[in-house]
Image 1 (cartoon, rainbow, N blue to C red):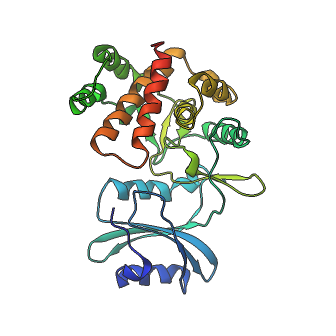
Image 2 (tube, one colour; image 1 turned 135 degrees about the vertical axis):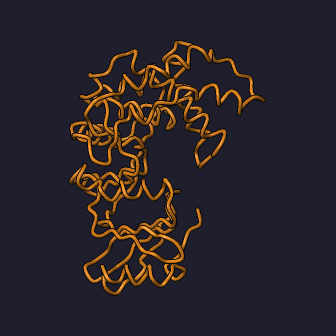
Image 3 (cartoon, helix red, strand yellow; image 1 turned 90 degrees about the horizontal axis):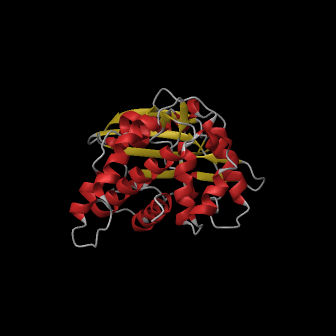
Length: 292
């Protein structure tokens, strides 16, 4: 996405921000994140805040609206929203000023002291109810043909998977991920902000969902594999999250099929930084689940 510096923003946008925060000084630009047109730490009359903005109607604007409501979904974990506003400039902008959360990213590597913090945080999220902008994951995951699409896109690769088996597994997933718990759906190292005292906050709630309480932990298992854990070791970590006990083995295997197909297709058609690494990790975990 095109990224804007503060001085490049339309005057109607900067004027609206000043209406909320007073005199605004840029502390720093935030480079992480692929789904917004502006991401800045600003200093206003009441201290620092994190400004995110999206230009034009798109799924990214919807994700930012979801994120602006996350403070009510996960109070004490998600950053609070200080203001949000739609602004007509050259085209529609949606801006959100978030509470500024300082901290470092989590370390997912084997042996990291952060693994216990990650487990405790995943447990906290799984105990929260879904609803609101967190739509049912079962409704979002209705497509079952990711593997067929991937095989078409990756026709130049040696493709040894049993597409019929994987597609059948994917068809079973919507029913298996039903539940009433809050799910972040995109937990990774940079979504955890850990301060010097070990307190943690979770950011980037653009695509929350409602579903089975074990789902975020299953996502994290694949992220741990991507960070260097063996699949068995990642699942041994998952046991430390209480909600993991609510899973069924069949559901986890079907979940692994779905995520590996989905992430593989996205890596092949609209790659993002780290896409290939995630695809390989998801496929490695799937092979473990299928005993291949």
